[in-house]
Image 1 (cartoon, rainbow, N blue to C red):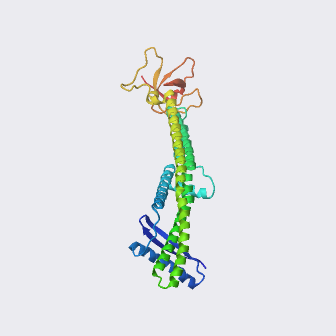
Image 2: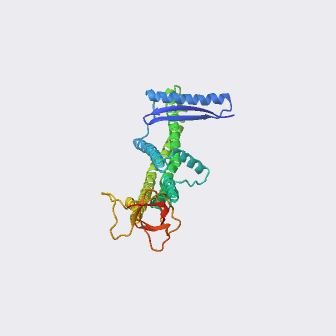
Image 3: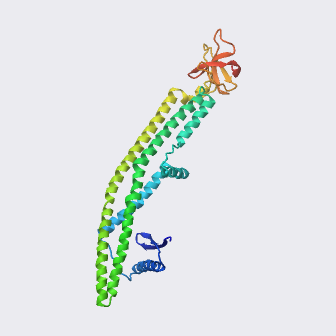
Length: 360
């Protein structure tokens, strides 16, 4: 026969607490007995709330330890939740990761940086790695993929050294502590019920029986209070462990941001050395920032030409072109008339004459 569950709740200054009682009913008589116990608990809570019944109070030190444990549970859950949201902001991805974790399978998920980097690399390859825009896209894409790998490593370290220890504490030590506190509350209710029966006892025999029950209940309550107190005092060691985890988390953040800054600085330096920061002047060298077209020097044999169509270089001797850009071209003696030497900033290579429109 399936067990029957009855859910009760009681409220005090610290909040509302559910009380779940399981009845492994083997007979109707047993069900009635256990249901009566649950009802009496509810009546006892009500009387305590109204102040018509005595309630055994714990000492101030114990209450202080209990409040600290409640605060530790509350804020640890909040910190774990917030940190988890930073490391993986996608709720659907978090559900998938949770399922794979339960199945004890690893999932190598691509980060947003890595996805962006791969798209940039593919776009640069499609536009032509010999073009200024295409080559720059590839460089930036490679840097984004490095940032993505650094982010993935940070997430791994933060999860291992910070989130997992805190979550393990919540699911292990804190659950045990909460269980023992519920047992202590049950023992306290038994003790107060015994005190109430002793006050109501009329005959000498009833008083003797009530006193015996009270001594047993008091001993069980004291023993459980001592066990719970030891667990509450252990929260201090948990704080010390969480402090070490917090230091590891900050060090992981420091390493991640330092590495990311270095990747971006290297990218910027590479773009500057390759002339990509002056991309407008590289692609349109005939224009300055403050004036119109710049004519070549009288002794300069170069001529200006406008590119009519995109052209992808087939080898290193050729120069890739973008439609509508303006470049300098020269003709060398004995050179194939279908080809000219094109120049774009520091880049130089053969270009097909049919793709050019000569300018004055």
